[in-house]
Length: 425
Image (cartoon, rainbow, N blue to C red):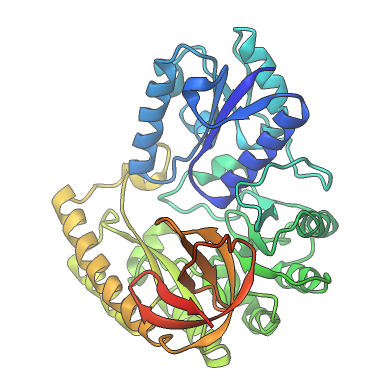
């Protein structure tokens, strides 16, 4: 029996591909191992969305190449960086996101000492797809591939143009995840907001259908571009009232300057973003708002940056992914004049420090809260667990007992910037 080591980096869509690949390999008789040193074949699902992550991918590919074992490079890197991969490892097999269904064939070819190259966009998740879930509590369900945007800083379109999966297929995937024992369903894609716009439906209709499924489970809705959120705002807020949907929304801001948003080709303005947040919080006061912000975009003046700081103070996001701009090959923004590295670094730190204060302020509002918490992962420290309440707030619980997958009544005792500390009651 051939032994395979798989590792994954990046977004939940990549994790879903990893789970599918692992399931297909196990079904075909391969054995999964937890170390690249004990394997006959190594598979890495790569991410290229940020420069630091990209550099980490290159380092891992170099390390795996030194093992002199067959290697499959999967994820977003094969389509964007084929020549670079082959510079480090000419024999590495390549598997693009749209070809994950070819993983078994690629593995057999690689183990025979040959090079497999599958870069076609032909993959979609059938309802009977085998899966090896990284977390038995969480069912990751892809709802589409690609997106409709052409943001100037991004080369994610290498996952392809928008292709929404049929609603009935998604529903079957959700049902199968629930049958497997999952309690949390993650609906994921590059941009959930554009789901169905290529097929005569939309995200709201999908959420309604998912919420009609019988069972005790929660739904985490993945990232929604504000451009699409504003076009279905009332209907989206209405469906969010359903008890099965976590009161959590991921709306990427990227900049608080309309001028920079225009250069980024985001398709919305600051006013649109504020309106979405205000309307959601008016109807769902406990809403957890997650956002993404890029500092140091080419052409960002100090005035533009100050506008971002002021907007963050106004909207007070619960979670903020702060990224320093890094030019990505083939992205339009890579051809613009770049800001000095020290300026980008300084602005990133200033924004992060502000956000950290806001996170703590937002979390302190939850101290004293009592209610149901679903334990969905192990904590970093021994005998700790992380659960989520209805607003998807992470609550750390101490217990020597295995709590994974259990719903418990807890009380929040303390707050930190990135989590709450609770106790079972």
